[in-house]
Length: 343
Image 1 (cartoon, rainbow, N blue to C red):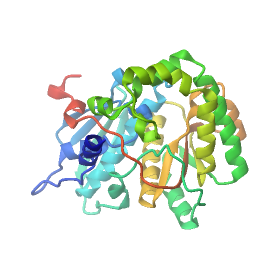
Image 2 (image 1 turned 45 degrees about the vertical axis):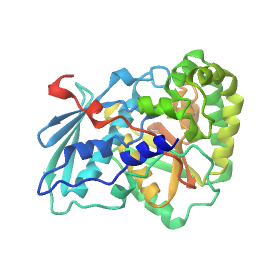
Image 3 (image 1 turned 60 degrees about the vertical axis):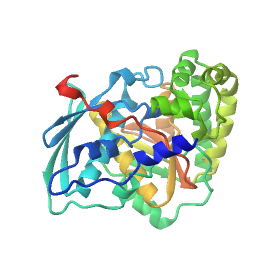
Image 4 (image 1 turned 180 degrees about the vertical axis):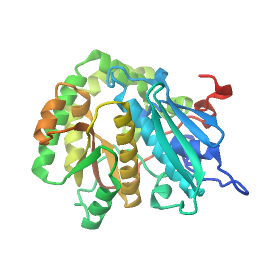
């Protein structure tokens, strides 16, 4: 565990500024890679083009069962792009971000700016995490809620922040329905197991996926963890855990998109990342509870319950005050960069 923690800490060291002028591109990529991704798959690869970066989807890291249309994958690209934009501002650059539908690529072009500077979101890049343990149960402070609402603005994206306990109970029911569908599906179980790292040594080897100890699981040999998963990770067990976690939360937040296509998914990823960074800066934790989004037959019922006449729920998270958990790992920058412009 000591070695794991040392690697995680090294990956989150402060940005190293180059002597003289110019962007430190490898550092931007390192900080970008600390963004959120489904199952911590890190489904991105980057091409460097002078003063621009191009983020491509890494389709070898798809999750076709839980994410058949790659919506979560493109949201992850948006998360990474937003981290890079914020990190570039700390070096005195603004980033013009565009999406290229023909290749599914997100392009960032950097320009110097006298107004670009560090802010609390930049500092939070090193500390943002998805915290899968219970929170304190403390209600949101009014000033914190207003700050979160201001952070969650995007093109065609809006949020609903629900603090009412009766509404959270309904979310618990939706999540339980999702667990029932997903965890009764052998294909889902197999895909999930392929991304779980059942002990720190395996997590260090791959530097991706879901490290079991982050959710409080004891370390197990990889073969034993996979063999036991179907017996331990049942719909009831997971739903019971989720119910405790949601009831400990200050609020549940739903991100709504007007459109349902890759540009919209990238945009909602950017908005989520800003929201999560602002939350982190305020000492507020977050964790995804996307089961009602991922099970297609549940999603229309969720949209109806939310009163959505236009748009659809695209992400669901729970937020609350709590303690920092161990951090997940990231792959080295050199594994992310496309060498010699080869795809």
